Image (cartoon, rainbow, N blue to C red; front, side, top):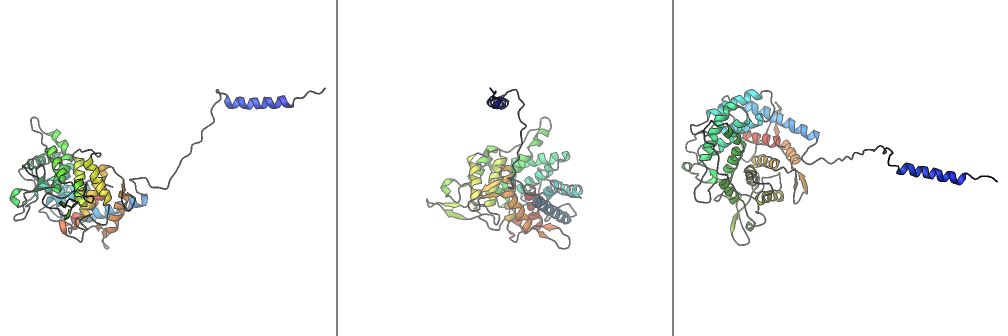
Amino acid sequence: MKKRYGAPLVVLLILSMLSSCFAEDKAPAKETSVTLTSSVQPAGTMDTSLANEVKAALNRSLDWLASKQNEDGSWSDNNYPALTALALQGFIHGQHPNKKQIIEKGVKYIVSCAQTNGAIYREVADRKGGGLSNYNTAICMMALHATGDPSLTKYVQDARKFIAGAQYMGDDVYKGGFGYDANTKRPYTDLLNTYYTVEAMSKTADVEDKRGKGEKRVDINWDETVKFIEKMQNKPESGDDATGGFFYNPADPKAGTSTNKAGVVVFRSYGSITYAGMLALIHASVSRDDVRVRSAFDWASKHWSLEENPGMGDASLFFFYNILSKCLSAYGQDLIQTENNGLVNWKVEMAKKLIKVQTIEAKTGRGFWVNKNNLYWEGYPELVTAYSIIALQNL
């Protein structure tokens, strides 16, 4: 009789295979890693080509500004040192072959405008608003502080003291805000002056730690400041088109008025002042989740545009670009959900816009920006170029 080995052999092979599959003491198979890639640009970033274009635009504009610095270190109208301080910020935060010398000349001029009361401005006789002491002081103290030069600390401390002492604390709708000297025929406070003050006081706060022993620390009344800012924000009863946005001050709408459903006349919200109000709240340490900040962002998203300063057309257009870039960078939002264009990568769109509208000199290759609408001083190319540089540096 023949022995049959076929079936038992198959069984043994199967058992061997199963044993190898389920044995716990066997080394696991080597894992294969898979990397997923996407052609979609991450939010808040721009491709290499566009980034290089931004760098080139900045280089052209800094070269242009460098060629326009006056012998005394100022830029444009030397009656207003804030014009110089804004231009100087571009060099402080940027790169230029003559950066050191340019900054030194600019700082020397700004310091020459310091007054005995700590303010940094120049008296301008017979001008409504005078020398714009609050604007100039706030903007200049930020530039001095940004240099990081400890020899300038005293100037910044004195400027803070002047600013804090100028806060209006009267018992009316202007309480808590900042504005103009009553002797200059512009006694009111407004959101733009207040924004610059809040930004300056927030960014220079560390100089208070450097005061001498026994010297009193200086600050503004932040609670009253926030209350004033809030008063300049349109509430839901103002109507859907205005809710969340801001206006200039209680007496001057700038962007005009509208009538709500209840028949009440309300001040229209507009773009640049809405971003200014929102950024002022952020600098005042109001949470980004606070309804006042969220509603301002919602208004800005609903009225998204880089073709105009929403509600103001081409008036103050480059300040609008400047404040939008600073505000959304501080807010930490890369994408804007708009009503008509879907999700917008605002940094990319801002870069493209400013590159497109930069004027390049054929002979020198230098670049600058200017607004054909001279309202709010935007006919000054030095000012508008400074605004644009700062906007690009915040991308």
